[in-house]
Length: 229
Image (cartoon, rainbow, N blue to C red):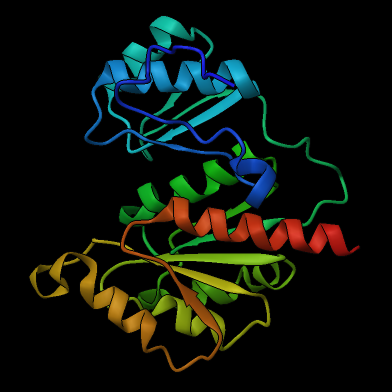
């Protein structure tokens, strides 16, 4: 069957069947795309699925999207654009994800994870500013982490927080190193290596500042849990 012409054919070939294959639809990575390209892609995704998400989006990207999709929302801190309904409707019995943030400076990556999960339709509990420099703050909220189905732990500097959390709770942990830190942190490389070499076993690590990737991994875990119940 011949494919019908689309305004995006010259720059994009959308994968509309991705959600059926792996549970998460194609997401728009806005950085390095023009505002017009992002707007056109999101419009087509929204028309087909009734929902769309763009990551690493600027205010210029959002202005172009909003001109075509007035109901779109821009989340400035994590640089996300969302439009439409969640992928699934949350239920009272749903498990939640704890998104644990070491410091206020790590919030952009943490919010990228939290809002991606909310868009996917999962409950989220945020735990902020509980880094290892004041470890008592983490112990005060440990029950929130212990009762979560998945913990996403976001930290910069030396990236020690996931190892501490991993030594305290049995929950699956997805660690997100951030580019926060002084010169010798090498733009997040020190946190990444610290998390990869954590002494607490069983920690999964995503790339630097990749809150979206952590949310996608948590989404897969939650879907598997729900399908097996």
